[in-house]
Image (cartoon, rainbow, N blue to C red):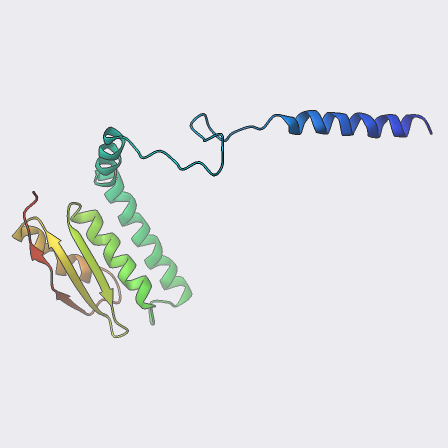
Length: 152
């Protein structure tokens, strides 16, 4: 037994050194050097990501996220007093889901006033801002500073 213990420990150490010697990567596209800058995505990848962000599936995901937040707020009592960041985030998600090609900013105040600025592509999208924002619990007043700027 006295000779077996050092032998087993030696075997474990040798095995550990051999296992740690092979540096593995998380994926084939991972850089060999961790200090190496990542490559910029191709035009096709960027377009595919943009289409995915504006898809019906993404819209449904955002709406489901908003509903889940509302339910969580109702359970925890957070519907009575909500943080400005939460309110602006929920309104922004709602607008992104339903007016996908817009460039909107959202700011919320403690009293439930939400200010929406930026640009939309047409008058129809501009008219959708207020009703969509008011669907979020806690929004009392919507101030629209957004303008119509057709896509280039």
